[in-house]
Image (cartoon, rainbow, N blue to C red; front, side):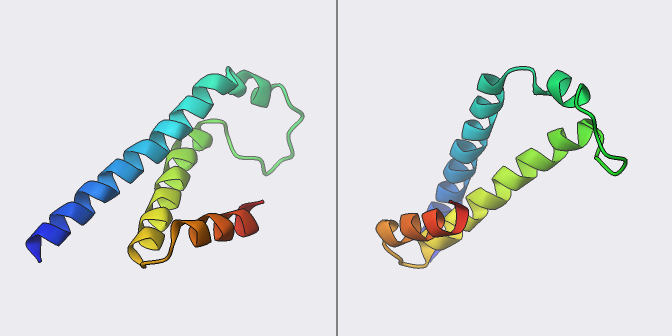
Length: 89
């Protein structure tokens, strides 16, 4: 029982690191988005640029958590991929 919890914790940490790494890499490859964002004509209720630095890592963490939960539900990887394509495409 304890071994399963340790394995699940290690899997969760690896999944979070991989997903956050993908997010970091996409931000790195996107270039200087903050400058482009600040030069846009923005509506009155648009968030300040520093909010994105807070929200995006949280979003990637939630995506990693959802992926971990889906993997633990004994659903085949193909079904998870198809569900992800249907939901996010």
